[in-house]
Image (cartoon, rainbow, N blue to C red; front, side, top):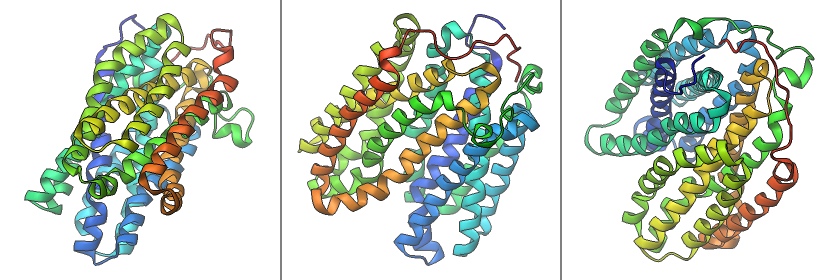
Length: 400
């Protein structure tokens, strides 16, 4: 393994992840509208069609760490991208709710498996001394997709319609399959001395060393889900819809600019100097969003929240990897993203029950408080012991 980060397989892995994420974001932006306009369903049924994808992804993330111990990481990635391609093609024929629900669930399962597999492959090829920086660069693929995907979806649906949406997603899925096929032979080796099933039970599905930091990230993504799910109706109510449409662009740009520096800071100064400011930034961004009455406040809140969530995601994953033996790296990735998906999934359900009592502004103030409390949670479960020897160092080859 070379000391460099930007190897051919690293770049291919990041690109695969980018196109996988496009296949997530583009349909998600239009699924409710597709159900109501083309399938004849209700808004609630459209919400279920959107949510089934996340449910499928969560199911596969919880179990694909164990699958990788049998199939190998590259095999799971390749066949999952093939299933993603098949699922996207089936969208063209999903003219009933039952068919659409089935396609969404299968697509979500394949996406979750592929995203976890490629993340595990990339994490395994990054030199340990540059893991924070390397994972920061890798996760920029998600940031780019979160900005480009919604934009593409909104442009296409306003000009060409749903079939073009599915055609673009088909091209993205095909690119994933082709790029995976061209990954190097080291990525196709089966893992050596894999211990994902050594103890049976829950340890076959979760890496317990990664659970504490994953729990912190779950809470932070619970806060972020309040922005993803409710900023559009909030902006419509307050009269700054145009500014809200730029929210995720600013959010993504801030992550793109800041992540390389925060990743390097993680590697050179430790996790606390990166993590603690992230909680404060998210809390400040939520408060600012709650009091905003125009574009300046909304976009400033996007910058703060983008910085905070970007650090939590990249540094949180780096901490999970740091605490995990190399032979259980697959389970660490699946555990981390299972918790993140759970935070995104349960957030809108709980906050939707809170909003009638607090209003949108009150909800954002409440989420600011949750972010600050999460800083205390981080301190007690990881921050106070950061820098001390943790995890298990193994000498097994980090083959993929």
